[in-house]
Length: 398
Image (cartoon, rainbow, N blue to C red; front, top):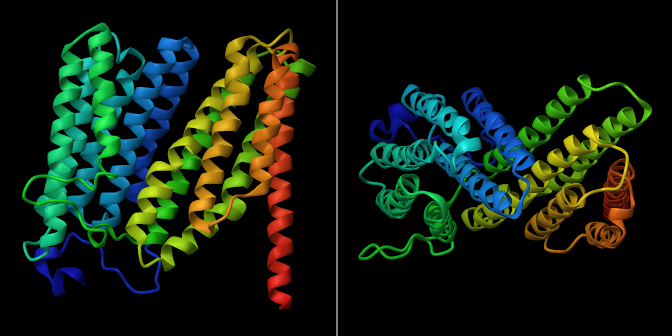
């Protein structure tokens, strides 16, 4: 239909008012690469759980998230059901596999490969988007040029870091990450073209909400797969079984907190918003980052607890077991504030309880610490469900 109406804009989605654009199978297929990337990130942190190692992993995670979310924006505008767009995603899958395989050694021997794969994917995808944009859509073309300019500068920093070694690589890559993360907030200002307009960032809200929700599923699914694989190799003692159950319950509670009320509210809010681009930039580009980071950190905790459920909790176990749910709840409370306009009391209480637990966490065994954090997540999930359910019932009565 689009090709018949406008051949020069044939690669863009047809947006039907009041109709949600579904996530396509090729987008789901593309996301499979990031299951591997998330696994690599969690394993990298598990094996390099030092202050410097954590900084390294943080830089890599920020890069992976930014790569995925920028692609989600572009496929929100382009139509993945068309062959050229599908071929773009397939090419990016190859780049994503190269990127993912280099994550464990990105700050060692394979840094240049990581940098080349990342830069090629970010720049190449944006060039494709620019070429796919019809000439008469001036605002969109200018937006693509702005983004391409910013990403070309960061690509140079990534590759320069790949060619460097040690601290120079780290600082160059930190500079690249900062440059990319401030770019949407700076509205991709470039000389002559100026700032991008808010109108140029309009998205199909339901599709964007679903895409980001699916990435949350990726992170939760990766954690469950790793936990299952780890548990299968262990002796099935009472402690190990309880640790496995606690990890699963914690993952279910995280799913409930995000999806039961929040994801639906976010999808409805952005679908009806007249300022969908601004909301997508805040709620789904920036604020989903701590949500996913918290799930990945919790997955690291689950593996540590499964392997050593008894004894006192060391610093790695405390940091990951409490830090993961804490970062997750901070992300969800901010996300829900962005889409609802108020802070969830249940999430705030959960954050406070986790901070209180931190004071005496080292005195607990990893198993008891894991069970305590899972219990806190359950309290948050039930509290929110009951309180919002009561609010909905009262609204219906009136």
